[in-house]
Length: 610
Ligand code: G6P
Image 1 (spheres, rainbow, N blue to C red):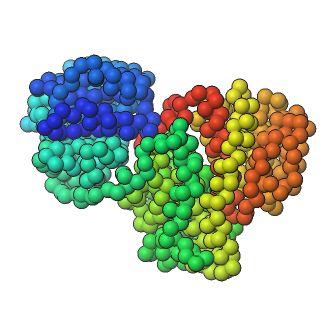
Image 2: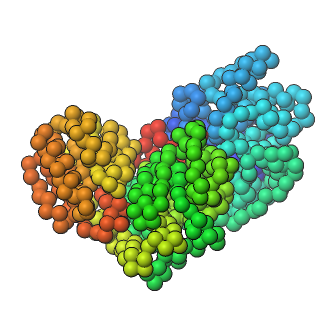
């Protein structure tokens, strides 16, 4: 999703800004732009497409200047085009903006009445024109921004510059994260610290409603009440965690799939010991809160939602308390009934997903026992606003399609299940020992699955000309099927659906023919015999099957049925292990189709607008 980078320095900043933008590419975007103040004049270049296209335009000219802002845009209002790309300009002012100004139409009407005209279809242009309007009466950019934000509704992180005030940058935050990078005699801003890694590791995170005035030697911050405030400067290790290069791999997604057997032990480190779960790894208050917990409400989006669905099965099976899972964008807009003694859990790789964050904020006044975040980014908003936090240690995930973040979330949720079960005396010590030893063997099983890569490449060829695919599973494998379908549609653009195999006869059987590959997730478990019957239902109708099965299930290749033989693993970890071959399937189909695997069209890594 949109990315912001900005700088005030003595040196020319255009190359720093371009490097920052390229570090944000993984978030997903469709156009890019840059503006610098060159001798009191604003120089702006914008392009549709990749940052390298912007860089090549910038490199055709000389773009000197120590004050500048840059942006990657993911279209919300208005198509991807040069006119809609940021920075947007009004008079002497330029802005880059993430988020959505919800009342832009109303403000636009007012500004048109004041004689302003508009060149783009964006909500952002309203922001810069509004500030320009107030600059007619206010003494400087900062005061004009302070006045303008009072009128804004919606979510924004934005950075402004003014050609009349070179060496100054004004930064605002409400609903979209922004960070200040503290340098030596130079300062920077960005929507994600990763953008600023080459220039600093010292960061100040703005809080909701903050406004900052940033110059080379000074950073002044005002809170939402307009009071001058201080925010902590932190030295971030996180930005150096997770090598941001592909190494020997062709794509970040491939690297991240292979990294799973390494980051899972990292996630386990210090969280289990001697065959025991350690509930304290969920925070100092975890034991007290887990004891009281009688229900769990899980809220998340995308892949993280699928992790929640799997956790529901685990929690109900092993702990015997109810667990509800909801998509955050639904949860936040409906009236909910909160049972007494319910723990609220958010799951988020980025910790910045707008809907999940909004749901967390909403939950605070709804009578929950407390909130727990399962998250991969230590300094994210969701982490900072949750009472208890369990960090997955997947390292930076760059591929838009989530892989290692998902499996580490599952590990975290399995540890949660074990820990709450233990605290509530629902899991005996033998079950605990077996669960912990199963979890510890996940990396070994993943490595076995990864050895099937060549076999998966072969079946991937069959998918290339297909327009649809159906994923089937039963029980805890239903959400695994959902995740497999999501991976395939995200990166190969093949329409993929998932179904509980028992539901086949209630609709999807009508779709079965030789053009609809059916992927079945079939580990050896109590539901296997039921699943065999569902497989027969497909075969009887001429369907083409790809069965990802445990090696001791007795399935054999036959006619229109291909078997991908996988290790037989303990039930409790099978959702984690059986996800990996589905990630590989999606990856190889996408490679053969030649899509942009790491940055699939129209998608974003971190969805910071609702
Ligand atoms: C986007 C990403 C997905 C991710 C989802 C939720 O759609 O492309 O990979 O699962 O957002 O993101 P979160 O960071 O909250 O897990």
